[in-house]
Image (cartoon, rainbow, N blue to C red; front, side, top):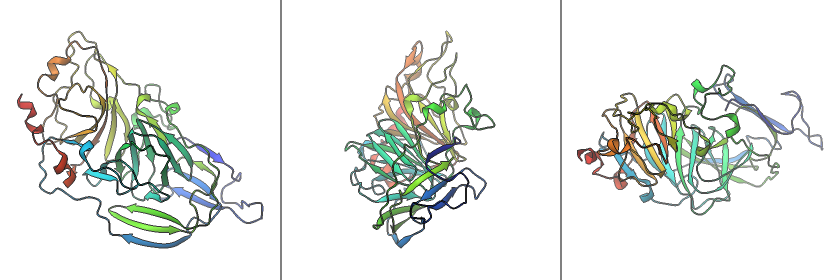
Length: 384
């Protein structure tokens, strides 16, 4: 997020002595990206950040590839996936490539363990649930249909989570940004963007936690998982400033762009990385040309695989979709509305639908979980 933020207390200049009341030092940490060339934040800790009592690799297999998966349109029901687990084991991975991994999760065993994804920015879409995201930067309360964007390397813990919860998880191996075409050369969102800086919720201040008791941290780095035992509580930050921090954005804050005739999916975009884009489908007025066909035209974007996570509403181009359904349409084959949906859209003035779309620029692979929860007849649904 290219917006400067400052919370807590810190010295006027960087890299100078900053002392506690007893005369000892606070410990400065630079949290940087792209070496020292990208955006960064500076944090001031009560205790030394590298203090670790032990580290060991855990024998955890996160993704089971479905090698025989068809390269074809697929519909599967995430509500039928296993539920429950801790911050890592609850993640039910469905699709992945070298740029991302997609999962759903219903957390039921959250404890005092901390978590860090060392290699991926995470986008947690809160389909159902409320709680608080705690990080060294502060606290972000969240509720239904919030996106939580967590930069890679950030230690976090979800607290006070409601029992009935469901998340759509997008792990991105390149930095998550707002779309470049919506920003000026200084990083400020332009007037024609479908959201503004006011829509993003940054961390709220939380008093530093000064605890020297051992703390458990699970760290995911690629497809490996390590258990660290930290000497001190990681939320001991007395102040920080910079451009790298977690934030929240609610899908209902997205202002849809509409036109006289049907506009292509980039108008729905909310996030980007070098390997994918994330789009919102939200309630909106339909196209207002007298002969407009509001349903999307058939298309084949040969450089993208299209994933839709269905949140709520009546989806104008699909039949048999449930809340929590996911469809995958690979770039290898054309796709579009199912029979009858194009005709039914003509003359309709608006729609009520919420969905999250992920378009990747490399082919996606399916896991064995998809094999267990997919609709085998979906590929034949265009036969009428």
